[in-house]
Image (cartoon, rainbow, N blue to C red; front, side, top):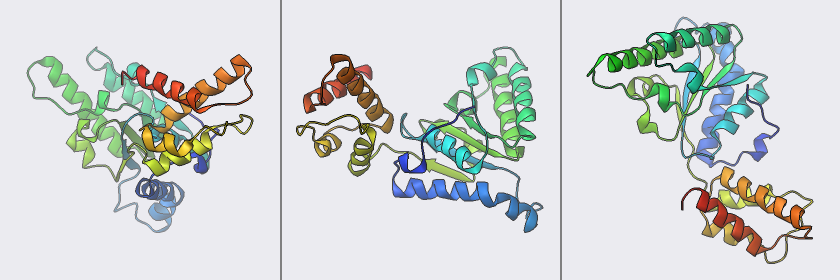
Length: 253
């Protein structure tokens, strides 16, 4: 189960992505009325299927957590390493157990790095391909009949099987933040207890370095710990630049 201490104001997304997330929130709040009170259950499929795609650290997991937090729904992140099995039939059995447990609870199911399970089906060359394709077909069927919210998360939309894409009610892109969004992320990131020296230029940092929200938080955490460790009174621009360099080197940039 995943939760968050953060609020909607902490989620920094571009206007288009945020609008689509608000549409998803509207389904969570008004879906039961539409299906039951307005008698659309006969005409519409139960549940809602959505794809979040974009680079790591751009807010996909946080969005899923916030949707659960503000609609009073438990969000479960599916560990695909526990679900996918090399033994024939085991993956389907694991999935059947998962959906059976979730169905009666109304959980939001969040499949992170969904390419591992929802990837494109291959041309059948051997028995392994045949069973891999059967797993995808089974999953397609189960996801389609789940009566809650299913979120698939992937770095690339093109990695997801076309048969899944056609069944999504919504496909939401989480791009890298723009300069304007990075500026907001930088301004929100530092704790009020930390004094920033006059040399710290958040506008310059926003303009010069293409970083995700998660990257920025890693940098801020490192900066804060360095200040505490060294017993310094304030944070300087050089300290932040050193932390940015460290973050880029982690990614091999």
